[in-house]
Length: 172
Image 1: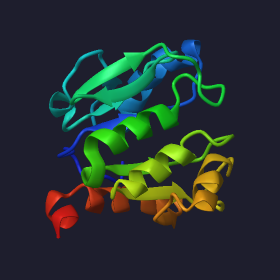
Image 2 (image 1 turned 90 degrees about the horizontal axis):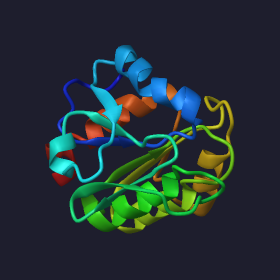
Image 3 (image 1 turned 30 degrees about the horizontal axis):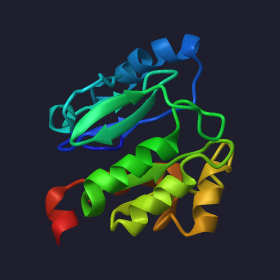
Image 4 (image 1 turned 60 degrees about the horizontal axis):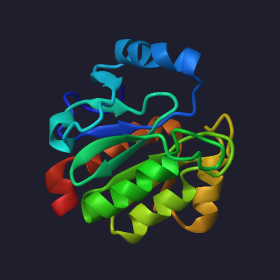
């Protein structure tokens, strides 16, 4: 909600959520924010997603390949499908210095290595701080790896993302 609307860039979202709850979650999230939220579609161009949130459907990894969204049934990573690392690794390869990655509260280490990949590719990276995390697992792992350029409380992440996704700011 803290990010300006409409978005000028695509926002890709991975959540560790089961099939039953997951199918309704995108609709619920869409109603909670001014941003359009819907499940990603296989083969959709990244440019077509600009201005909205594309969420990985339950049971599918979300990745970018040659400027298109891919929904993958490849093996679980860190016991997860979808996996944040799968998405972040593809974002690092495809978007490089234009990438902005953010890792929020969650159990385990999924996303930490991928966030490091984004940082190494020259993208901006954020992890949620311990005090505002329900479970400080995934962001903690990212911080320990040096993957997080910034570690911020939840209420500061939206405004930081808004600034980082403004083209003039990233280019300056």
